[in-house]
Amino acid sequence: MRRLAAVMILTGAFATLGVCASTEDEIRSAEKAWAAAVKGRDFAALDRIYTPGLIYAHATGAIENKQKYMDRLRSGAQRYDAVTQEETKIVVYGDSVVAHSILRMTGVNEKGPFNDHVMAMHLWVKQGGAWKLAAHQTTKLP
Image 1 (cartoon, rainbow, N blue to C red):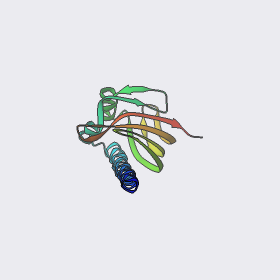
Image 2: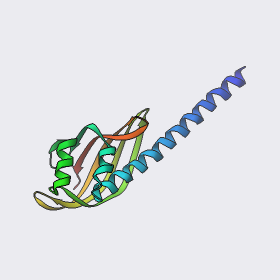
Image 3: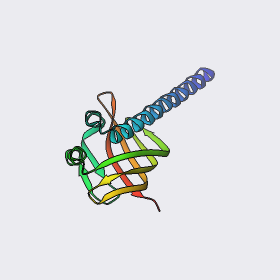
Image 4: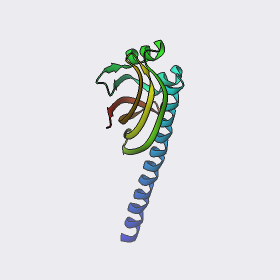
């Protein structure tokens, strides 16, 4: 009986590890899809990626909702020429995931060209069977 209980516990532990590994892979893919969509100005993809309640906090301190941020992207007031992910740490909390990345972001905004080395914190949530980006915050690195 003890042996059966031990096998069941280990099986559950390994299954959980498999789910976490799979979720991490899904989030790494979602992060890449986000970066490609931002860089490629793929507004349809971004609309699918972002939750309706998106909180988008820029390294400048500006905070925008989904509509305001998407309007700035569409108008060209904010453009990303490159988003390079240097490293990413992912922590899974069930149907929520925190992804912390070091990024190099280049482009143009209302102040002119930028070439920012930043930390980015993303909160991903599972909605309707898909991972959606609910919050983004960047902080400039020295």
